[in-house]
Length: 317
Image (cartoon, rainbow, N blue to C red; front, side):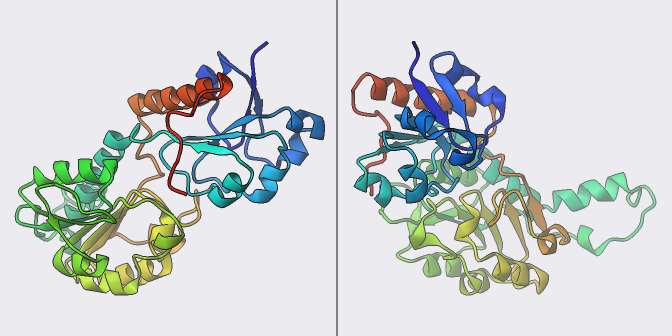
């Protein structure tokens, strides 16, 4: 009889198919556990799959008295109360680097779309304004990529891939990260120093309490009126009201965002602006990324039920 695994977050059914081939799945669909399952059913659960950004509190863990493994689908685990898990002797694992290439690709896509104002240009063609030779101040020439200074905030696996990709655009690349790396990019000791130096800030830092709203009004001001910010990390890293204000008042030139403070809801103030490019958190949403993330989840679950250490256990608590 297959082992039982709880699906805690709401996932598309297609992403769970491979897991269902190996385990008996109890799908909560993102709902309150006690509303979906009986106490007896919850008592049988030893392992769960969750999305890293989904809030998983101590109270939720307490409804699962025999839970011993929390496996995150994806690289993030910021929604999991790690202290509560450690206190209850629950291992937490993720899928490190599985979607790094795809996320780096979307970061570059957002950067180019924002700097070159691609959505505005697309609308200029579709509306007939181009054919009608209608003047548009948004279509005036802008500074391109060559010679720009691009700052990468967070030089983990995704940040490294972003840096390598952006360097190909004839730019200067700098970074700020908790750890200084042996890389051919300029290191800055603080985020403030990086923002003062660059005109494009790429946010690739891991989300957590220490990065909550760290990209604030001051950091945005330091980027300057020709500056851009691109966020593929988590919406919590940016002070969203400060960003709206900076974009509205043109304190910065533009932004590219794949993540938001309260997903799936992007503030109306953002959607109304022409100098911001928006995407629905699709950085890691490619076929190859999903296969790689599922491979990591299956490896973690297989090891857990076999009584072995989880290969991708989160150690930094």
